[in-house]
Length: 545
Image (cartoon, rainbow, N blue to C red; front, side, top):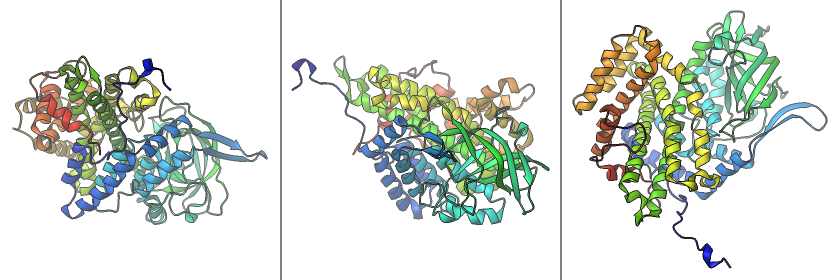
């Protein structure tokens, strides 16, 4: 019997047993907006089932278990044979299996495939973010492999399969496979042209032996990897299977697993190649061009992954504030807390709306939309991933000391938050990529400005921000030093345009007043008090079952 002094009161019930998809108005509206009417009911049912799973106690337990029991490297078996295997907790396999079954590696061949897959990725990774890495790379490998029709015919059905099979076997003996990527090396991460891994051609057409190393190879238990290496004709892209067609293990020595800040459930490794068999993808000397579409797709997943972390953090903060009392009332009713929550909600909705718009551009696959993606993806990747850590940190503070303990789940979100800003090119890389597009691809800027211009005249603060942006874009001399400032402004006017067209007036008004109109402080919770903040918070609240 508990002592009377330990009676528990005013503690918030866990946010569990709810539909993560249906409870997110910004996401559900984006899905409805971007899908053809004929498939909306099917996709809504599909995503709601996934949302119920993501919000279940079981999925939350899987996420905690996978992070509390990180993967372990086994370099040798009991007899001293080199095996280079990584053991994952069963919860990791359950998370990954559920995701693959839900079609989170299958976007390229289904109607509305990118929107439905992006929404599913945003929903499911709220349960646990680490296993999103192999999902993302597997999904993103498809356009790179399509440069070689024979390879695509062999591998694409396995990559887009809804069957997850763990364990290393020849790909042809599995119903579904996962694919990873290895580009960075010790001497230079972003500067892949400095790679030293060598590729020596064999007699067989398209066959090579690789010798070298990779400094960061995530999900090393994947069935294969797209890697870059120096062939006689220059830097080239290769498909490297973990297991050869005859069942023998390919030469793939895992030297160690990285001890990372977050992303603890996912294994990231340093690997060595020594006479490792691989097949050429695309043309010799065109490796960067071959793999760049994979990079673009994984960058979009960085946006979606950050949006998922922000959404989960904001949902937890609002849930806590709606149940926790202080100073005679619920926290959510206190004007200052409401200002903080509304500010966080704006950032979350803007990220979700932008991420789904980019996914819809992939589905449309027109020349104009491809041009838009060329500049919008690195712009979004730069800004949304930068905002993630700030949002999650402030949301954690809304829970006070309760948010600082591991049991709340908030510390795991905070450790994960900086990741997407680093993976697939850090902030400077994204900003410089935008500058490259501005200088070399005028159609990309035209497409971007056309998208932004669809909201011209809807808000005077937005119009002024667009005018200022055009002034900056007119002068690209010595622009590198202010590239971050420029790309930030581009991201904000793009988000503003989308919210003005599609979000409720109270959301668009608050966004334009703060992010574009300058009526905003240097911390969250500094929105103009005259805005309809209660409506913004209520819209962002997770609707529990």
